Structure formats: C-alpha cells, structure tokens
Image (cartoon, rainbow, N blue to C red; front, side, top):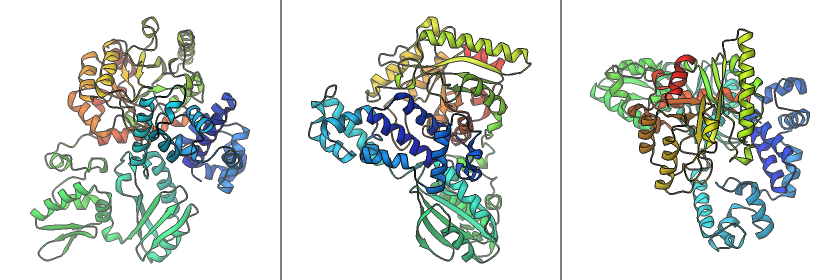
Amino acid sequence: MENSEIARIFHEIADLLEVKGDNPFRVRSYRNAALVVEGLPESLRTMAQKGAEGLMHIPGIGEGIREKILEMTRTGRCAFHDGLLKEVPQGILGILKVSGVGPRKAAVFFKELGITDVEGLEKAAKAQRLRTLTGFGEKSEERILKAIKDLRSMSGRANLGAAMQYAGAFQDYLKKIPGVTDCIPAGSLRRWKDSIGDIDILAACDEKAAAVMDGFAAYPDVRHVVSRGETKSTVMLNAGLQVDIRVIEKKSFGAALQYFTGSKAHNIALRDRAKRMGLKISEYGVFKEKSGAWAAGETEEDVYRSVGLPWIPPELRENRGEIEAAEEGRLPEMLDVKDIRGDLHVHTNESDGACSLEEMADGAIERGYAYMAVTDHSKAVGIAHGLDEKRVLAQIKRIDEFNEKLKKRGRKFTVLKGAEVDIRADGSLDHPDSVLDKLDCVLAAVHSGFSMSMSDMTERILKGIRSGKINILAHPTGRLISSREPYAVDMEKVMDEARKYGVALELNSYPDRLDLNDTHLALAREKGVPVVISTDAHSLRHFDNILYGVHTARRGWLEKKDVLNTRPLKELMKLLKRK
C-alpha cells in the first residue's frame, strides 16, 4: 500500500464513523491522520520496515493510528476499516463521492429511505423520493442528479499527486533491476497534467529486456498482468491504476521519451516541421526522409536540435504556441520551486489543521521560507471548526507574541496574520471589517452554494472583491479533481475586477484542487493579474505540495515576476497593503 491508499482508508474510516454518528473528536482524529499521510513525501511502506519506531517522528499520528499503518503496510488491509464496512454498506462510500452529499446526508438517505449506493440515490432522486425528507426539495434532487452525472464523467482518472507517488515508487523499483540504465515516467504525468489516466514508463537497458519484463510483472503492488510482450507490458495496480512499460534501446531513448511524453498535438506540429525540413521523427529517432539515414534520437535535446529548436520543457508541450515561441526565443523563463519565498495559505489546529502554529512555522522555516500566513477558516465552515471573531482576535495576539519571540532569537522569519474568510451567498464576508482590518493577509473563498447560476456566482465573488478587504481569492473555481466540477463563474470578469481592486488569484497546490488550472493561469498572465502559489497546508508535509503548484504554473507559462509570493517580505507587504 502506498500513502495515498492508506490516506483514503483513513478518510473512509472518518466518513463511516460520521455516518454512524460517532464521537466527532474521534472522526476528526482520522481525518487529520489522512491529511498527514497524504502529505508525506516518504513512503510509509519504507518507513514501516523499521516497525513502529520508523513512524514515531510523524507529527499528528498517535499510537492507535501507527498500529493501523503498520497493519496496512504489512497485510494490505485494515481490520477496523473492514469491520466498519460490515456495519455500514460499502456503497455509502460511493454516495459520499457525490458532490454536495456529506456523511450526515448519506446517513439520512440510508436510515430514512434505505439508500445504500449511488444507483439507489439516482433512482430515488428520479422518482422524487428525496423531496419527502425534511430539508430536501425539487432543486435538491436536480443538484444530486447533476452531481452524479459529473462524478461518472470524471471517474477512471487519478489526481497528479497520487499518480506521481505510484510512478515514483515504481520507478525506484525498476532502477534496481540489473541492466536498467535509465527509467523515466512519460505521458501526461511528465507534462504535469492535473489528472492522469494511466502511467507510462520508459526504460533503457543494456541487457535483454526479458529481465526487465520479469521484474515489472513481479512488482509487489501489481494486482494482475494485463499483457506482456518482449518490449512492452501492461499491469494493473491494486489501487486500480494501469501502468505501461516500454523498453527502449539507448540509441533511441531520447526520441522515444519525446514521442511518448506528447502531447499528441505537440508531436503532430513537431513532425510537420520536421517534414518541411526533409526529416521524419518517430519514437525510434530522427531520420532523413530521402535516404532513411538515422540523424538523432539519443537525447530529447538532439531531437529538438535536429529541427532547429531549443529543448522545450514538457509542461509546455500542448501545441499552444510553444514551437513558435521556441523558434523566436520567446519561451518563458521557467518558474522554480526555489523561487517561492513563503506560503500564504496555511491552516493550524485552531481550525481543521493537524499541527500547531509553532509547528507549522518551524516547517516553513525548515523549507527556507521567509514568511507564511496563518489563514484558518472563518466560522461559516463549521465542519472545519472555523474561528469566530473572538478566536481570530486571540490568534492575532498569539501570532504577534510568536513573531516577537522569533525576533529576539534573531530568526529572519515572519508569520503573517491571516484568515480564509467565506464569501457568503450574498457576497458579504464572514468576518466583520473591524476584524479584517487587523489582518495582514485576507483570503476569501466560496465553500458552499456551488449550484448557483453563473451570473449569481460571478456577482457573489465580484461583491467580495469590491469590498476592498481581501488580498487573495482562494481556489477561485472550487473544483475538486475527479470528484467535483468547477462552479459556474465568469473568470474573465473576476480577473478584470481582481486587477482593478488589487486582488491576487490563488493557484492552490493541493493535488485535489490545482485551482486555478493552466488555461486560467495563462489568462491571468495575459491580463496582468498577479497569482499566489499556496499549498493550503493542513499538515507539515503539505508544504511539499508546492511542487505541484509550481509545475501547474509552468503549464500556464507563468514566470517569477507573475507570482506574488516570489517577492521578499518587505515588497510583499507593500503589495498586500495596496488592496
């Protein structure tokens, strides 16, 4: 079991306990454990090889959770989870994937109408049975039917974070096979797309490919072998992800890597260019069209050089003008993780985070940051234990005291006083101006009412921006990859108003979100709207998700100058105060 699968089981335990009406503190402990596990860069399977001692340093993980992690890494199952599935029908977990249906609603459907799976929920909505329940009506049924349709259209894909984790573990395993000289994931994963259908891996070896195929099929996490050939094989992992491997000779490795990285549209444009130059490009190399002589292919750089271009980074290979830009020397200066100087969207255990203010600050300092903003939820997000005005003011005082301690110790790091404030349905903000005016960094976000019409949702967000009280619009389209479509909103109008009022737009690096997406980021760059790349960290390890945000920004052609939190603190504070 990899981390994402263990985290999924902890999320499911929390959901099942909540459906049962269990102690909310117990539910929260499992949710926190899932958040911590999701953010771990190391493999729990590797860490657990040392037994409980190998898991001792993970913050937010108690003895009971550690025992379950050890059990899952050793047996691939969790007895407690299995027991809950005997008490609550497994189909309830499917219902919980329907946008807008949480554990409480699922419990009502189950107890009142005997609904145990998505199909049953769909039939009940179509038969107008849901409106017989208190608090449900015709519109509720319409929203649920739409959400079920959306869920089905997005199934079968993994988010970038989960796919990277599985691909990384598989890659490390394959590199240890004798004779393998190189091993790289290709396809949409290498282009850092936000969701992945399957994983493509290319391997070069200096011995017979049969040994690589044997090792590939013997990978411990393989559920079954789909197909096996001399140079290509396919397996299905226990998590339901398909993995393809191709063994390539060293001479053609660069050409194959370029070809199988894609995208298809980019490759077609590149081949058309080659044809005009009397060349032919395939996965085997670059050839002279008339004589058929091999011209290049050992490295990707050689392939692009053969057609008069510099190497084009994989994130840009979508046929969105990158070939023309490369020819004219206009490729963007690619953003790097090292360019990020601080995180402006961080949660603590005051709301729904797993760690304290001090622990999160230490984590940010360890990563070389100069600042971070504590942005716990406002009171409207009850499920996240959101803060009311009294608790925000107490947190402000605590942050001031903490910063004073850092200053006395000579630490060049600052915690900014912030909040993630709900934009209510009427466009008002969930904290009064008297509180917002005391904060350094105000994030505003939509967390409810996702089914509003485009005009109403757009006006709701525009009103929040026009308040003049917010610095950053967080996860601006509200999407959850593979589970919830973006809400309907006119992003051009939002961007125009954001620029007018000095509001930055967030690129939320959480792998389930990656919101804004690459096309919206390109539009923000075109309009001159600054972007903030944040992690929405709920645990220490979530800081590492900045990697996904940076690569998504690269897909949107963003450069260092386009990103607000690449600035030093003094310059950042001037920009924040200018809202």
